[in-house]
Image (tube, rainbow, N blue to C red; front, side, top):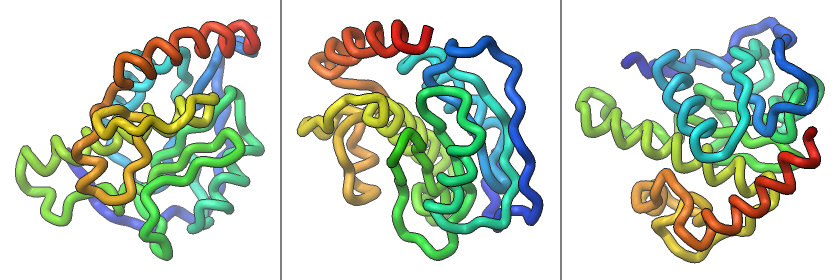
Length: 188
């Protein structure tokens, strides 16, 4: 897998998704050099654990802050939540932004320092999957979970992220199943 660090491109491209109106809970996008293998894994994982998802591909922009990327994503939002993987936000040590229906993961912060081993690559994917599921379900109304093994646990360090599961714990999963039925009814 290729996980290089580059800054965002200079031109913004509007994402055009071909899907029926109201079907999507999550619209998935990326900014920068995000590997196709990673986007495929996260796309499948979020679809399996959260619900209907549309992959809109890349947003190309010179914007390099969470707020500016979130503003662009908000203008092209086709679902209830936009999940955006950003290769690098150079001015930030924050790994997760979650506000107003936009969840942004700063991959540079989640990426282990040495990505040469299979274990480091697996750790990176696990971090991204856990934070994606947790961020999206939180944005759709789920409260944080105090149990560190739950994807909804609010991790403050990469060590805590590494302790998290990529799934919801059984009590949160039960709450999510109830909540998601009502969220899906609202989108139809």
